[in-house]
Image: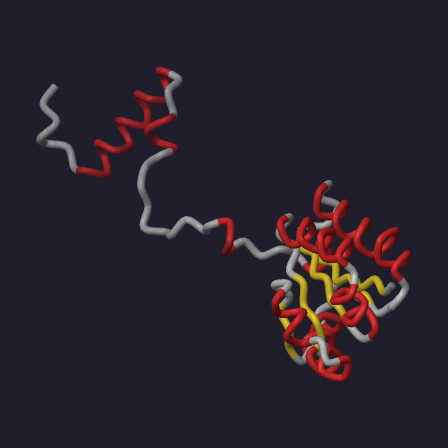
Length: 158
């Protein structure tokens, strides 16, 4: 069969027809396009799948038995696609004083959960540098929290 007289679109259709008859669609499915393929990092997670855990309590039992346990397990078992832990107020001081909480914090961070401490609160307790040494992001968080709430993310407070 002389294919030189066929135009490129006709050859493409002919190839597709032959592949369809043979049952092999792999070449057709993998045909390159000019459209960029979105990466996983570009995929938008809906706000309904995002959780902000607001830890304000200076109570150690609340930290261990509620905040850290829930935050860690929510990430571990994929209950939420995106979780952020915010350390706010007395919890900032407690975290810098308790080695067990610091070890648990490492597990939470290693699971991929970002941890942010309010700089204004941490400064009031004099613990900003200690929190930063624990790989906690220390930043002014009033605007951040407000934006989380306005974006309809789920928020749980301990």
